[in-house]
Image (cartoon, rainbow, N blue to C red):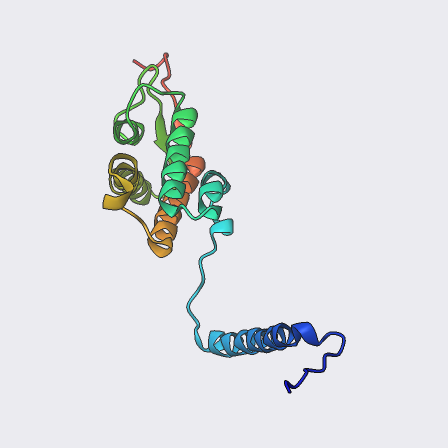
Length: 189
């Protein structure tokens, strides 16, 4: 005669309940372990949410859906738009616009320049102009162009690589915002 299992109310999901309790205990202990190790890791952490608002706002939708490649592309386009908006120009490619905006030449009609007038030391101000120009060119050539022109499978970005590129774009946009605009003075020949 087959032995009949005696069931009590609630026993039907006992295995699942026990598994959930074990999982909950594991999660709690993993957080505790992570906290212990985090105390020993003094490296600073980079948070995308603390990057330049324009960059993260442009990237966040793509990032949240698991598309870091597209997030970087969206942020690069936003950086380009910010530069175009500040200069009031949409007639040049990103690289050429950075070069013109950072040119050592005086502004011309319809061709304003980005300057760092608040830097008192002339040599430092000139270094900043040249550095921002080189950095901006690098961002558009080495960050934007590969994600914008190569198929994803040829240039797919992992989370860390994408985050680093977003940080570079964030810095570029911060410098664009920080720079003053020097426009052509018709009184000066």
